[in-house]
Length: 288
Ligand code: HMG
Ligand code: MG
Image (cartoon, rainbow, N blue to C red):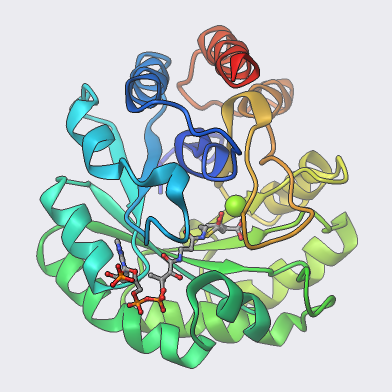
């Protein structure tokens, strides 16, 4: 965690979460330009793509090409999603700085998203996390559907905390608590995060909120009050999950930056540059 308590690490997820759900995929060179623009804007961590089955997410089938094309800044972490060993090999070969193993607090969502149960997913992640840590690759574990599931509805906070604890035990350095479909309210966010905080220190929690109902900023405020200082956001507010019907974009980076600045938090990111990038990205998507 950053030594300054007012510093928030903003993780830019537009290239991955933003583009995985687009009906017309962007060409690899536009994705590369997006990542390069985000690097130039000062984003400290950028989730670039996913090494997943191209049948599951054809939009990101060019993961290796995109990773090979980006211009890296030495102090920026370029991370990718890896659901299994095959994904890890792709990430390692592409020289990813960090990987994300993504589980869920909902059995049905786990089946729909990665075609296995929660318990099976954790066993799949085990060798991946171990190998990543041995190779000096940072590891995040995600708990999807923490604030609600498109298939099962309400998810007990205990189920969220259980998966968070398991991911931590596997060796994940950061645990991302995700409101996959943006159904969270501030009151529910408080309950779920307080339960997770019983098993994970605030310095190791990331907040990943989709903004389907326009409540992401209120929910993030609760997270900040609880001491969480890592937030995912997507330039232009683009995003959604193909396996979560109803999920719209992630909370927009521009909005989060303005929100944080108004409360005295710093991020090191140039808000003007991200705003321009968000507009540019929306133009690229609209053109197709
Ligand atoms: P499966 O069908 O059980 O896997 O899928 P399999 O091992 O039986 O393999 C099936 C086929 O996929 C085979 O190819 C494999 O080679 C291939 P075939 O023989 O049929 O030609 N394959 C792969 N290809 C490339 N890279 C790989 C890979 N693995 C297998 N890594 C699997 C299981 C997990 C692979 C599949 O379900 C999958 O790829 N799912 C991706 C799901 C996904 O990306 N979802 C969106 C991201 S999660 C999200 O958005 C939530 C998040 O934002 C947080 C939140 O908001 O909640 C993170
Ligand atoms: Mg997401």
